Amino acid sequence: MKIGIDVSSLTYQRGVSRYTGDLVKALAKEQNAELFLYGTSLRQQKLLKAELRKVLRSVTPDRYDLKLQHFPPSLLAKAWSLGLNPIKKQFPQIDVFHSWDWLQPPDKDLPLVSTIHDLAIIRFPEVAHPKVLKMHQDSWQILRERKAQIIAVSEATKSDILRYLEIPSQQVTVVHEALPTQIGEIGQKLNDNPDLVLTIKKRLNLNKPYLFFVGTREPRKNLARLIQAWLPLAKDYQLIIAGEQSWDGSEQISKNPNLRFMGRVSDSELAVLYHNAELFVYPSLYEGFGLPVLEAFAYGVPVVSSDIPAIREVAGNAAELANPLDETSIRQSMEKILNEKKTDSENRIKKMIIRLQLFNWQKTARQTMSVYQRAIDNFGN
Image (cartoon, rainbow, N blue to C red):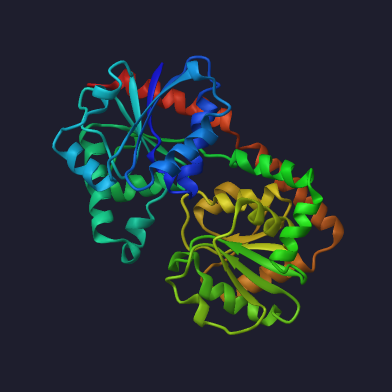
């Protein structure tokens, strides 16, 4: 099967970019997959090439073809809306094209598959730029008109797609994502270099017990309630918050010296922050999958998260789930884990390992290949 994939998202350095990279690596291991990678960027060309080198270093050159173009996404969207620069012109031999949910190629003679990670842009439109929202809406309309096959990364996301996008259920398949492969690579690097771990801990000033959160600081991440829930515990535990700069006002909630905002951290720093935390707290109001919960499991850190559909689906019984709208519920869940006995802690770790084993990239790749085949078989019907 000759598969075209849009790899432009590798420049974003967020969850979707890691999904793209890991999916490409996993598909390259499938015997029947031949990959044709298409990427476009203007200001981020160097970054795109650097990220592609990381992804492709484990892929033999005979398994893929690559074409990069110098277009900003807005210009490419305009060109594609006019039927210009079709993917088939770049790769006339491909059987199917895998896109993301914000931009679709103009090729009406090409079976189309698109991954949708979440519909936060609909559920929380107040934080979306109008142009970005319009781009998504146009893209979703194309997916409906062309009867594309949609990959939802969770049952929760599939439910949202059926409800908000009105795409028929037979066009939507749940294919779970999995733990980023780089976590294992970084973990091995840190295990082999204990001096590096000590250097990072010293640089980050990790000399007190702390609770940890990582994510974009937007309103749906619910940091205001997290901070209020943590304040009664502040005497004994710091709260460290890592992630992109805030637009939710969380930094104004408390001036407690044990509340620390770190901003963006490196992958190695993130690994050390996870691994040394007493507890990972993720009380999000809405998620499409909830990847940070799996990441915390991988580092052996107990988790308090939200009792919402996507988190229940991913975490199962391995995390303590709280009502994200209730500060008392969040605090009580944190206290329950912080005060639990050693045997309870050991049982929790066993549950975390079991959950992690449910999600792996080769399983994801095989299920994705099945969606590609369905798109090809149903094309034109």
